[in-house]
Length: 314
Image 1 (tube, rainbow, N blue to C red):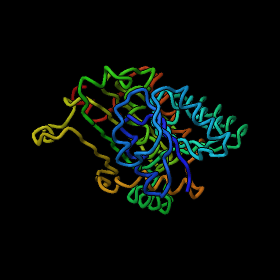
Image 2: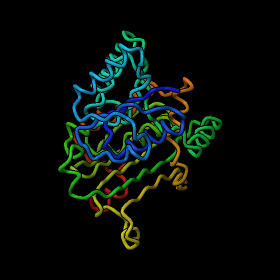
Image 3: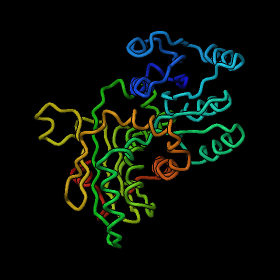
């Protein structure tokens, strides 16, 4: 049985990590979050120590280490801009890290973490859960088996409506979240790289505080993408059903069905990590560079490559 600590216990994604720790038969012994709305801990580990101050959390982990009661893994569910610092903290504390997406905001941060791994002898594991989805794995096998020079035509559309709170939180601050493409899109961009190979072109066609759209060309695909948290972007038929989320990925006009199978992907990720097969730093590089470049390039409409939702009026 391994001992875990968790940073960002009040966050949206933290319960999935708590469940994964539980499902894999391990123990969560310490949690940190400046927000004390963390009653969810009682559902999994009511005896876990909880801290609202980083310094006391640090002291607790250090005391355990001096008593040979080490933390094997630190799970990091904190805001995006803190991931780099918190991964470093985990490694310096003598623990391996398990970090939520996005691993970091910029590709050069990965290079620093590679050096930290070498210096400490600890490992950084990351959550790239779509790589474990059965439908994605099956499609990748099909693409690799085809060995064709033809490129698939792909449309990726993801709209997940968010209220006014979003812009008032750290997620609405591009310096903290990385912006829309990073915060809600990075795992899709990793999936596209995983499926279709090396990235060859990256264009941004539209970007504002709630929406981003562009074009990516990979070794085996041409991808028009559209991401938004604005409910006004939802297709009319979705709004009529009072639904607030729309996700679609079409490949050569055929819908990729992967709406199910998400429930246990974090547990599967932990199983792979504990078996020594987790996704490491280098696995994140292409997706992190993709979103970093999107964040820093000017938006410019294309005459022929715009996503249909952009052509309809964005």
